[in-house]
Length: 315
Image 1: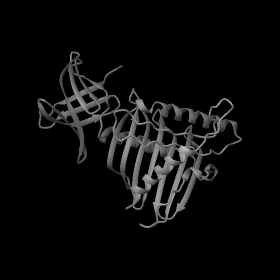
Image 2: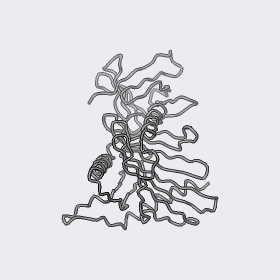
Image 3: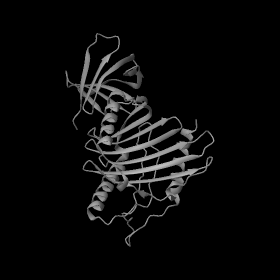
Image 4: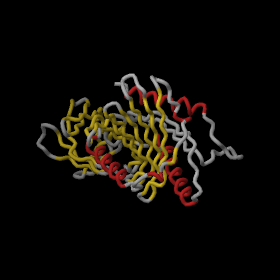
């Protein structure tokens, strides 16, 4: 099936278009506010970074000052998230069955306090595929960018679609859409396709469905993530005992000194997540009982069944 190649072509087309696009500027050389640029930097030391994308499409202006003020606020939040992208840590889930489709991959991006800032979700259903990014503040989405592709048959034609959804106060305040159908592997050149404001055609502008989906994704990433928070966890039983995960390395500390160091990897088995730690003493496997933004509970496989409980170290 050509879904993966179609998504790849879509990404490549965006990359090529952004290299030649010119932003409108003021006399001072500052980009004007009628474009929304999206530049995702590669997170240092993290797996599965997002491909670098640039959103350089003309936005649809409005004569409503309050609406434009809300849109400007969303753009500011968006830029703040993108500018801090390199410092965000990741949690990843692959191949998770969700509702009536399978999540090919979901990647959560978290700040230093463990709060989710954005989640990307890739999914495939039959001859269709999509890549959606949810931008989040206080657990609620405020901007959604979706790229989708559909193939009528193995030989095409292929339809490419994009959506940009702006959310404020639990309501969709603007939804922009575009689509183009091409034959074969023709580049759709989506940045050249104009956006259409379809907000007034929406039967329901409530963003409750998107908020619920984001909460479910946060929960899935917490429970089934194949990565652990790259941080330090302090034992609830003995605050001198600390474990640290960083760039695939697992360090055990006691009283501020490293007592063992090795590597770790995550693995999903049936309906549970496991972490295997390998060091010079051998290999130890743990089952992850609970993982949230602030708590971690694990138990040694084959051990006495004791639960090791940790809290995220305060910085």
